Length: 449
Image 1 (cartoon, rainbow, N blue to C red):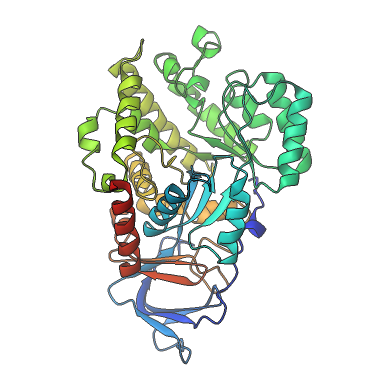
Image 2 (cartoon, helix red, strand yellow; image 1 turned 30 degrees about the vertical axis):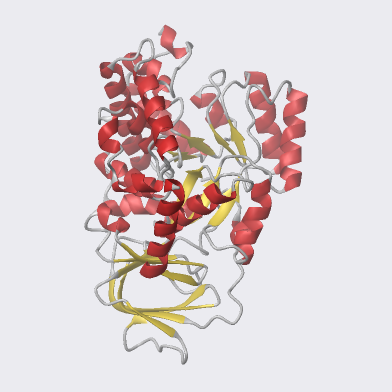
């Protein structure tokens, strides 16, 4: 498995002079394996977990803040690995997005917008100067409009590495020659590459060149098309939608093995696909509880985007349904075949409200056949492994970073319970339910003004 080493960019400074915090009588969901540790005490100090053990065996430090965890479950914080964090110049929108992530237990966000101001934002979040989730950030998009030659590809990759970005992000339109130049340069300088698969390259070639993470499960459906079919080399359309009717399920094991052997991870963003191509009426989605945190103009844009996609020339319900079913089968096969799946929902995009959509994404994973435990691992353990932070984050154990979520119900019994959040901790900073509610109320008021 290819580890994307980004740990240093995620180390938050401990809060100066902060007292220890002890969760007492809590049911711990450590996530190292499918188990619970009932009636435990978890002690946090200086941004790290310092003790985990049965009540009565772990001493609560003098002067510690005590959080009564009886009847609650404590698990690691979640990661959103495909988030579009607004530019810092859009201060109000940025505040809203960070608070929405935080209120939903998302303690790490991989931002893929590609905005220079995110470098300073990442550092201010890491220092504790600004409150919110940890941030990983990509460089400006590498695509058919920004990369005109192999030489320019190399220059851009080297510049992004020198600037301190955590990763590079690909968008459509790259020629095969320019894609290969990007990958060769990125591999040489040690800059992980994530994003879309160039149509000129195809999924199998993209994997062979060392992409660290394939976003949206892009080009996998076209990769199921036999080589003698014209759809294999034709334009794939919306993430391979146009190839759905020619796809052959017998090729699923081929793509699973190609992905597993490459070491790449997958960020499926099923929520985006289902929101745009699914059969649920837009009016029903607009009634989801989290839509009160979205400005009316944005909701109108989302509705128009969905309507446009489903009224486009060549769209059919049959093709869309087959495409979505193939994606569910691919997701389950990739997971069962040992491919790391990392939680990503592409928020805020069409009907994907930051934080809330991560929980909808996990629910869709369960619909595809994963257990709640396996779905939770995509936002915890698998992320830590993918970014090279295994042994530092992703589980509840002594020595780990104190990124935690306190829940009011058992998340292993029902994935929906992962959304019953009573409090969130990022690097030892505790946000109780009252704090989270105040943040949500502020967002609701801000988007309605």
